[in-house]
Image 1: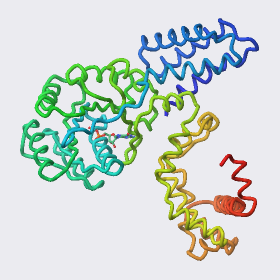
Image 2 (image 1 turned 60 degrees about the vertical axis):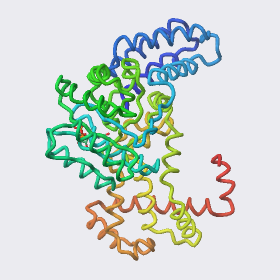
Image 3 (image 1 turned 60 degrees about the horizontal axis):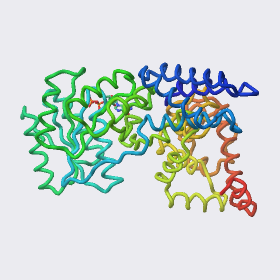
Length: 440
Ligand code: GDP
């Protein structure tokens, strides 16, 4: 996420680190580089200029040059300003209606339908709500079908009227339907076009006026940079929406949209989409995002993700096995599944402070565990529970079966051995001290 921008900002701060004594000239030079980095990330010119002006004013106000660590203070000022630009505080979602009506808007392909599903799933699993998805795209039968597929995947009802050509009526009928069925959130997916056009704006504006939603959300593809900001402005002028959803942040996004959009429309980014799967949705925290952009990681989100996916029963089972010396490859596999549930590897690495930078030349595959899983799947149940029996002959068979090389099998065996040893140490009498050393 935002690798390029992070990289350039890091280089900008290097200017300060290289000098014994920091002068006004170095600070100005650093801020010039910061501005250049923002422009390269497709941040609007005026926003980038104002940004550095503000940081500079604050730096002068706080006498940066006379402080003990001017470089660090400047990074902090940049972080604070980035946080402010992206909205300051986290913005919640208004669920006060009965039912709560949420209207989705945005261009075709922005990720509206996918996000409608993610939001329904989020509200159902995290907020204990009973959502209804509504297909209001009267032009593309495929879009209606897509929403039904999404609804089925997450176990959420989908309302559609394929023969009705009036989206206002469909939306109104859907709300009545939800009331009858005792469903308390209605998420309305509307038709999008490839570009802003008047007919589309009139249509969504009519739906908006008729149903008066509690939340009108504007969905935008973050890969589109400056265009995203312009589209946001056009939709906001008509709908005066309540919040922005930035999708496809898992892609090679430059960051311009995330940084500029709040200033242009003065509406908060509420959620981000970080993948195609239904659980690839995150609440947007401006400060955490600023920290990630500056390579400071996002430990809070990482811990939250770990807690969210932590399976207590599974952990207890594993602990028992380690104590009895029975930890095998099946358990290793189940640990991998747990990690995979937390999100894609690249994203997780980005949350570890400094790791993005340290690993920037390492190719992190989306499916980093593919080979490991293939190797383990090629083992017999006995080999998995008693890895010690895996001899040279068995290794060759496993490599062949999994389409890998014997060296890869060897490597995995070694990693497994080290991991088992470490786990035993943590469990043993010295374990407590070791945990203490690790700060637990
Ligand atoms: P709509 O036309 O606005 O309803 O857009 P869709 O929901 O159909 O999404 C368009 C494409 O973007 C689909 O292929 C989705 O799988 C993909 N997509 C949506 N959100 C994300 C996301 O957060 N990350 C990634 N990588 N792809 C996404």
